[in-house]
Picture 1 (spheres, helix red, strand yellow):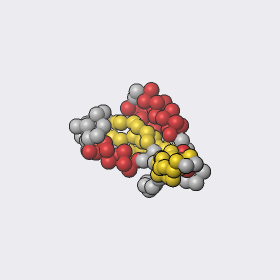
Picture 2: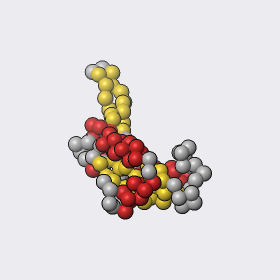
Picture 3: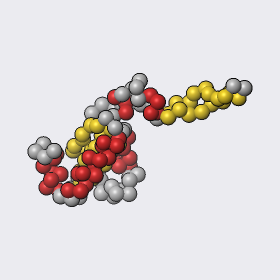
Picture 4: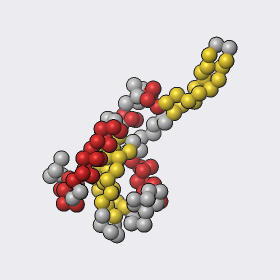
Length: 121
């Protein structure tokens, strides 16, 4: 999967007449300019030692997987190394979070394995 470089925020000149200044403009202002940059992903990691699954969502998959590998997430710390076994792309992070919750509600390793193998959706 290809990493997407996307602005989180951009420092712009702004202010009121007579009071120039700098402010941050949020990334949502750039969605029209960078529609693919705002794509979100639901991902499933599998622990190579414990054989357990972790389901998550993010808009920066490479960064997030690296954080799991470095132990920045309490849920995955000490259970690695982790391998990315599934990812599903969405237009918005809200859609990806809804799908993440749906998968987590299955509470079944069999269902997750079936999703990874492509027979459940």
